[in-house]
Image (cartoon, rainbow, N blue to C red; front, side, top):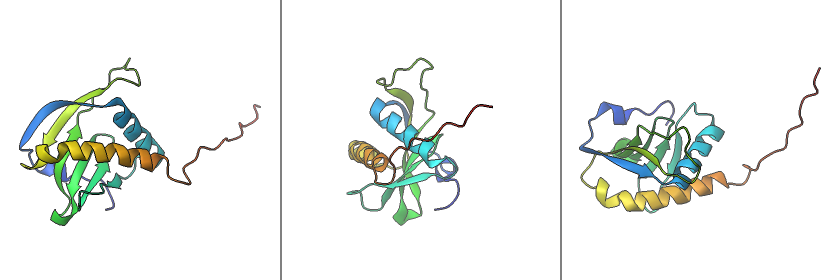
Length: 137
């Protein structure tokens, strides 16, 4: 899907509550977004959850159902990392549910999302490179 994903902005959520994203998950997602350039959403499959995919964007992470026209199911938004946050500390955010099944699948989505983020960051061809520094004039 090309372009910015906005379906979650077009529909009101059924419910919204405060949530904390585990530090490892937040840090992996931020790193994946930085590496991806941030122009387009980073879409990750969620194996075991049939037609669901995760769209990572700087302002929101959306679990969307591709059988239903990329309809949002779960959205993490309004990330509030503290300026002095340690890398080991969770990040507060808002969790929005767009379907009655969202709370039921939430634990599975979180587990699979963390696994997929780690796998995405360690894919072959994503190794770090040492770049030469330019000579000073």
